[in-house]
Image (tube, rainbow, N blue to C red):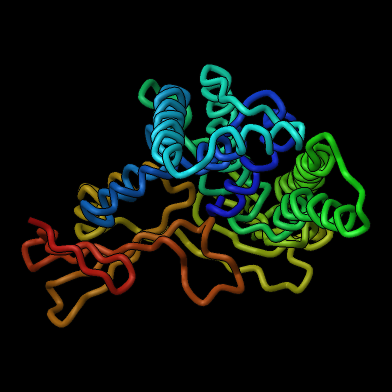
Length: 352
């Protein structure tokens, strides 16, 4: 998922009750819920290297304890840095009036950070990009395929759980009512239940769509593999991919009906060529094919008929209404079929 959903999830987890047992719980869990994405630093070494390590070791059960420890260390540094600029007695008194703990329980904060980091893995697992949670023992990708990478319904649930209690608190302050306990727990719990409800509905619909895709025959051929991928907002609108021995079929599924508008697209599996075989052996090719679920390679000649550009496409990101495939890098090959450059969109990455 994108960062905002992770941050909001961490904040709701903290407000659901952990902030009542230790100071700094909200800060710690909000940061930890997004901290796994620290692996984006790999992109400084190049787009291909970053792609290879995205959702890598920081998104695993082995890496989570270290990510959580780094977050707690960062929070401790922040706390120590701000102490000289804040009256500690007034701060402690203010927290006590609100019914919140004034002191940080660092072992408990580490447990909170662990939970928030694990929530990151779970959220990333729900979309169709996937995670590799058992790395370095297994590099297999796992994906639930039920939630779009940017899901407005989750924003509604999580923001509602954080904002509505705050509005209630402001109203109470306006009319002079005072509270001797922290607000927001009920709202945060309902927000998290709302997330679970979205997942439940989408999982049910996903199973129905996969079953419908499996029951079809595609131009006289039985499918060997099918998948359903979500659209945002509408849990009854899906993008289906069916693989047969000779081709891929791509279609929309709406309200459980496969290809209701009769716009199914058939894409035959291209024959291998020297150019595509060479492209598969490049660093980019190996990384991409390890991740892709429905890979297609397109080879075309460049200015010289002996030079080629090979494009990598994963059909799970080639939505029917999209003008171009997402995450579709290219490899340039010279007349000797030696790779000369990787391309990510308009960004060229020379091969040294």
